[in-house]
Image: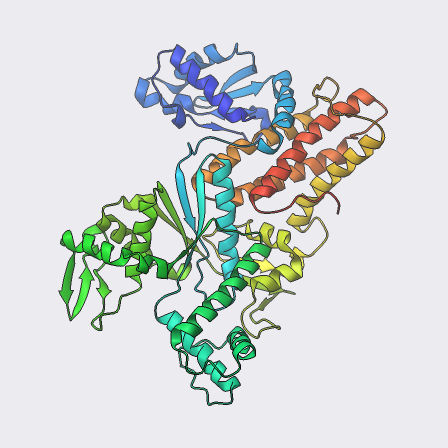
Length: 542
């Protein structure tokens, strides 16, 4: 039940009856901070001032004359320069209880996405090591956004791009081979830009255990394949334990093998956008808003990092996606303009690609920044974080902040079992409701959809907060900001805890108890659905 949308419908229908032409999507309806100013408020009269060339209060009076007699409306007031404050009837507010319960797991769903095909590419860390803390934030964001946009009616594909070709993978293969040589009693010659993590030694050990020293003469491709497969398996396992799964894993090698690089370069060349300078091939990205032209093929004949990315995005568009979302690290800020320019050069709308930049995460313990892992000696890994605080707590905390700001992740707070911990506080609200329903079951008290005995200010406010959920889902999907869901569910949990502290749910009055169960059932459903969108399980016991 999305009451805000229904209020918009009421206002729009009033405009139609008054022969006022106005885009329904542009009608602004807000929830006043002070509920004495109504359940909802609209500045539509001010919006129409220039269109109708009239005083906003005069316009407001005309609109109010139409909507004041609607069956949902208790009263309407005009405030200030022309704000329309709408107060709803109690019967209308409480009538939505049955609808929320009926929709259950589908409550809050939307169709605004109109089945538009969306590709969200995130994580995409090179398979040259284990995933660390910063990657966890991007993984949580991408997975949450995919959940929310799917719930809002988009056709979403979650994709991981595997950079399994190029110099970094060559260095990975060399690093593993040198470690293998060392295990076989030969001198190691580790490259300066090689990989020195303990996992590289682990890979070399698996080769030694299976083949002894029989692979010393193998070419680099052998070591590259084993290393990539080994590390990808760890990456997939760690992500799965973090509650993140992908629909598609696309390999850079497969993009190259399909000839997409040659195809994309041909398209750009035929458009006259490729030129030679200093023995290299360049792309005229300045034509499409980039601050300077970019090298495609270096003087030694090797491709720059941009070339396979151009081919990869061409491949994504050719797969029929309407819109692409890439989640990059903050260090890719300067890369966005050249990637968008390249897409436009290929003939696609650059605005069909949105890049979300991921800011850094600092892990805090006892107020101090934790930089190194005790287990590996390197950066903190996703698996260590999940082992220490649990998947649900980790996912919740990552979902509390917008991507565009640096995040401090407080380990002590994340494991604290008190209301200071927002994850615990929200989870406890759901668990508390489950406990109440268990008590009700023992007393043979069922759920009632009526509300004759529980109509009061607190119950009304709680229900109106429940009804905000659908609008929050739509805003989170449109703005691509999953933290709006987390903020909302915390506020809902807080309102429930306050309600529970003031009102007994199960009393000697069976009818009243049944009605109260109907009320808190809507809260339980909403908390469950909201937490699911951010990859968190709603606990039944705490």
